[in-house]
Length: 349
Image (cartoon, rainbow, N blue to C red; front, side, top):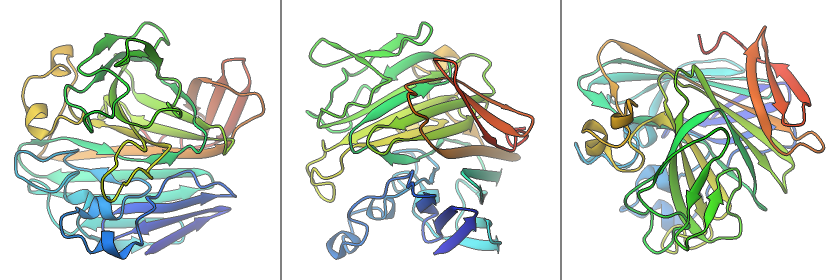
């Protein structure tokens, strides 16, 4: 295990599969780890992919979801194969995936600076095209509220994550007007995507399409019981969608067994939802909107992603704006209050 430190922030990086199983900022633990990571029966199950056995924190998926083209493991080699340590310092680590993805070399640079976690992946060479996404997960013991950068559409997949355990109706494509992010539910009601469905035992998934011309996209999760905020930032030019995975006790089979509760995946990437690589390579609902669902390989691509863990200021209910300028990240609440922290404002280019 690689352990990084900076100020009151500490991060673990597991080179065995490239995930970040533990991140601590002061007394906060922003990211989620599955409860079965140390269970012998789960770890010895040959039918489970490594990404599910050791499910934790954040990791890069490439391809994202099912590889129904080459038949690889779910979320690809980047989430299931070892990474070699190229260089390590006190607060940063440079790793390289031990295998190629469609012929491409994948490098990972992880760095912590106070409450900020920066990740850069560089993809060099390869052939064809591939889906990808970051996969950070948080757990909200008593739910929470979500805020987003401007979106232009929200979709649900045609096929459920787990049949019979969905809250949101399938196969929706809804345009977004302003900050109105709603989905139809199976029972005919509507759900506001600014709220985590804490009172429902479900497995749900939706796709948020970034606003036109966006350079930086963001999601802010305010956790009720934990009384904190996680800011997730992406390069929207390469990651035009944010996919939300709600896992709240809906999976009653091993290793989940109904105990994976209050979990939210905030999965920024380039993909066709959970439909698989074949669907992403073909014409689909997103490409019809002019939204790419695969990243071409060959040459070099750089994927930039960052997360910031902060306490929630008293009285804050929703973030209206996140700006990066002059070496700082500033959050503005809908009531006008602001919080500002140091941030490399040139990180996203």
